[in-house]
Image 1 (cartoon, rainbow, N blue to C red):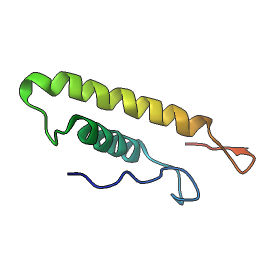
Image 2 (image 1 turned 60 degrees about the vertical axis):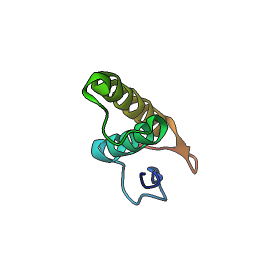
Image 3 (image 1 turned 180 degrees about the vertical axis):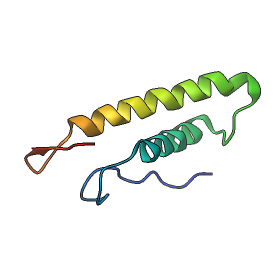
Image 4 (image 1 turned 90 degrees about the vertical axis):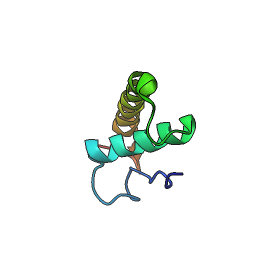
Length: 74
């Protein structure tokens, strides 16, 4: 159904994850969990809201991670 979500932190990603990278990973997650590649019109709002929340949580996680004794910067 969807490809694997890639790791978004160094050293797996050579540069900082972009907002686009984070949103793409959030979208993949919501697609996988919901079982819908594209939601029906009546599910669009809750689907999009979930993507927004997961992208926000992912950005916060990446901002807070310490990698090899330093704080990861986005």
